Image (cartoon, rainbow, N blue to C red; front, side, top):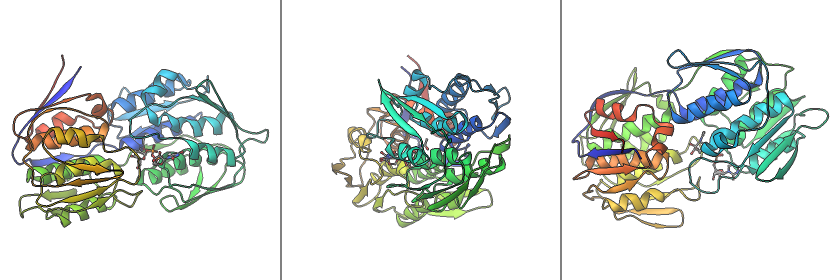
Amino acid sequence: MARILVNNSGPLNGEVTVSGAKNSVLPLLAATLLTEDNCIIEGVPSLADVHIMKEMLKSFGAEVDDSEDGIVNVKASEILTVEGNPELVQEMRASTVAMGPLLARCGKVVMPMQGGCTIGKRPIDLHLKGFRSLGAKITEEEGRVIIEAGPEGLVGDAIYLDFPSVGATENILMAATLAKGTTIIENAAKEPEIVDLANLLNKMGAKIKSAGTDLIRIEGVERLSGAVHGVIPDRIEAGTFMLAAAITRGKVHVKNAIPGHVRPIISKLKESGVYVEITDEGIYVDGSREELVATDIKTLPYPGFPTDIQSPFMAFLATVQGSSVVRETVFENRFMHVVELNRMGADITTENREAVIPGGKKLHGAKVRATDLRAGAAMILAGLVASETTEISEIYHIERGYEDIVSKFKGLGADLMKVED
Ligand code: UD1
């Protein structure tokens, strides 16, 4: 099993460039199934999850050419099967985003049970509620979900999401592009990744209005065509490197970060005394100017504080003066990193969805697990300031979502390496 070893590195300094967003590129690639024409997605990060998605597209019959670095060319002239490959689906929770495009294009999709990070139950009831509103019939048998459009095909409707689920919004958005009439998604997710997807779909000929607000309007069209589209920068990766500067009390210029996408992270870093400046090329973060102090965070759907930065931020809070409270409202089981941070001396307590971080702790190296993708990033951050070596196992989680993470950290002066047994 591969592991990452991290040593105390002192302040990180320098610049790092953020890659294309994992959470954008997966739905963008899935959207290419909506047309028989050629689609070109640019700025694609090299990640395990992206690899799985490309395999998935091929399994449905698409031709995928990724011979040029960062560019993926997809041509789904024909869909050969509407059934998700169980092994691929098991490996990646985000395979669910293939449901909307296949249902829209072929009138049917069959999906096995889901995989991905172990951060709670992560049901797909809202995705299914959306498909049902568009007239689809849903049956479940032997661990598979079978979704079939009615005799009229999909028909537009008003859909209220009980929670602004990112995946459900994406799936309904894609399904509705080819439905008859108008679809309205109420209480839609507003994440930048939704806007990115809508931008690609509109380039393909869809008629989507107000993506990025909580009420999205989609007028169905007969067919979609090919398009060329660049992926937005990864706001979670940007946040992770901003925290790398903060936790090590270093100075890092995070290039290619979009400030508007990371506002709550900027605010919370500032509240704790970190200097943050918006530059022409990204965001400059300096954690060395003041003594850093506690601040409370509460995760929320966008534009609130992102749940994906909760664990890296908690690692940071363990090192500042004073006690902070972290409240997780998006996922029901996203404190697994607490056990791991406590192995390093963080002394965090949890009750239900609330964690209390006493702060001011001198962390020490330990054998820890990357219990999920972002928890893995939290372990790296904690390892950078811990005495002795931190040994992180289960790093496949980290590689699912961070491109070249070891070399990017090394570029900032971090002392870490990946080892294979
Ligand atoms: C996406 C992101 C993930 C991020 C999350 C929240 C991708 C590939 N992943 O995940 O990194 O942490 O948004 O910002 O983009 N829920 C239901 N029923 C549903 C769907 C969701 O109850 O049908 C619940 C989930 O259990 C969870 C909450 O809604 O508690 C948020 O989930 P959702 O917004 O759907 O996240 P994902 O799309 O899975």
